[in-house]
Amino acid sequence: MPDLETISAAIATNVRGQRAHRGMTLDELAARSGVSRGMLIQIEQGRTNPSINTLSRIAEALGVTVGRIVEVSETPVVRVVHAADVVTFRHAAGGEARLLVGADTPAILELWDWRFGPGEHHDGDPHPAGTREMLTVLEGELTLTVYGKSHTVGTDEAVVFNADRPHRYANDGTAPLRFVMVVIEPREQAD
Image (cartoon, rainbow, N blue to C red; front, side, top):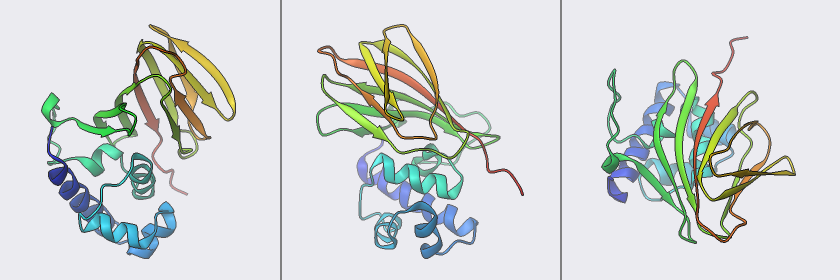
């Protein structure tokens, strides 16, 4: 896996490049993403390590995947992501979310590998309208809460849901939890 400094530099370059490609000012990106101008400046200068939620809001505002934002190198026609190159977001309690691979055409797609210890959770911000998430539990039991209603998903079970509303992934059990998730976000439709 690339070191934190390399990932921060890639995020800085990719956010700045995507923003410039769209002709957006920092103020416009701040308004569209809900991320402060000051935070965007720190990100584009590689001086901070943004959270998954912050990266998600920036990626959504730019119309790309989180994978595209954290990508360390250019994407070839065929891209094999080696284990050492997978970007990992570590949770304070010990869990982690690994963005295995992402693509931004024709739809925005992301493949994630999540791991939570007992009692850990992650609150997901609502994605754009039409976004769906599919996941399968590889180990343990997931408590998925979507728009206030909880669902239990056990080992070897799968679920698909509309992710354009508040949602939470939680390990309410006593054993480790691991699940693989795909996020499918439609591209913006032309008027």
